[in-house]
Image (tube, rainbow, N blue to C red):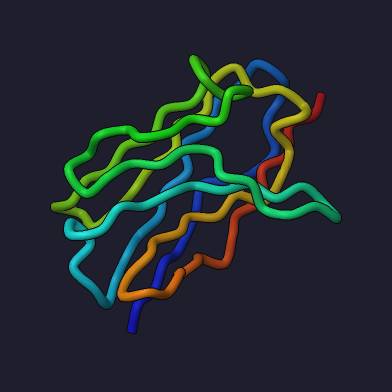
Amino acid sequence: QVQLVESGGGLVQPGGSLVLSCVASGFTFNQYAMAWYLQHPGKEREVVATIDLRGRVTYFKDSVKGRFTISRDSAKNTGYLRMNSLKPEDTAVYYCMTHKDGSDYWGQGTQVTVSS
């Protein structure tokens, strides 16, 4: 059973940093690409960044380039999204996702709130 569990969200002041983690289980994590998405209230999910199975970054949303970093540790079955210089507009629920055997699998999401 594929399972993704995010953690690391919270309340942070503008200019602050957070590291989101996504722990994967139920499949061979290092054989699949993964992605981070965000969702603002009332809007559709948007892809933030993607990373392939070898750890190569394949996409970054323009608004986070230079501020966010995506990475993965296959030994720990964990993906990460490091977020620096956070802005109020980064406030959203963040999800990790993987695509396996024709299906998308999502975590439950973690709330990030950037506010003073």
